[in-house]
Length: 303
View 1 (cartoon, helix red, strand yellow):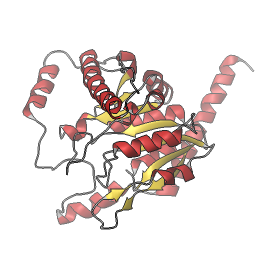
View 2 (cartoon, helix red, strand yellow):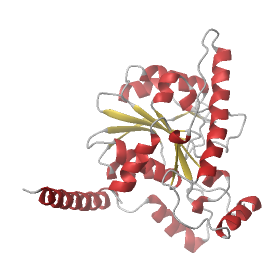
View 3 (tube, one colour):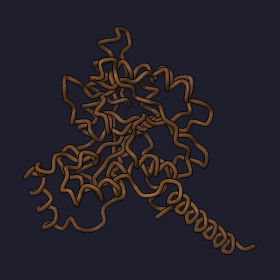
C-alpha cells in the first residue's frame, strides 16, 4: 500500500469515526438544555437566569466599543496569528504575572520558610481562544484519548459533558453540597479522592462556579493540590471565566499559583465575555507552560 493510499484510508476512517460520534451524541444527549430553556422562555418573555451572561440591561462598556471601532477602521480585519494578536497577548502576560505572583507572595507569607520562585509568563504560555468554550474544546480534543476520565464538580456547565463526549472521554463528577443552613455551597476535597483512579486524565475545576456561584477557598485548593500529589499524571484545567464576578466577601484564587507542581500541570481558562458583558465576542485565553501545542493540534487537525 502506498503512502497516499494509507493517507486516504486514514482520512476515511476519521470521517466515519466523526460521523458515528455525532450520531451517538445526538442519540445519547438529545438537544442542549439551552435550546430547551430558550424555547420555553421566548413565548412567555421570561427572564433567562440559566445562561451565563450578565444582566441583559447592562451593555458592554463604551471604551470597549470604541476600541473595536478603532480596530475595524484601522486595518485589523485580516487573519491574525493563531496564538493571538500581539498587543493582547502582552497585556495578558502583564495582568496574569501580577495576579499569579501576588498570590504566591500571599502563600509565602502564610507559610514561613516556603519561599517560591516567581512565575514569569511569556508569549509561549498564552493562547487566545474562541471564548472559554473554545479553550475547553481544544484541551479535550488535544489531550484526551478514548476512555480517559475527566472529573468535574456537580452541578456543572452543561457544555462540559458534550465536549468531553465529543473527544471520546468519560465524564465523572464530584458533588457540591449545600451547607447545613442552606446558605452556601461547600466542597469536600476527600470526595474527590474517592473518584480519582488510574483512568483519570483530567480534573476540571470551575471557580467561581457556574451555576451555583460557589467560590473555592484557598484552603480547599491546597487540600486538592495535596491529594493530587498521589496522581502526578492528572492534568488540571481551571475554568475561571467568572473571576471578576465575586461577591459577599469571597475572594477568587488561581489554582495554578497554589504551588510549583500544580502550576506545571494546570491550564487556566478565562474570557472577556462575562467581565465586559460581551458574550458574543468569544475572546478567551488559555494559560499554561505548553499551551500552544495544546491549541494547535485541534485547530490544524480537526478543522
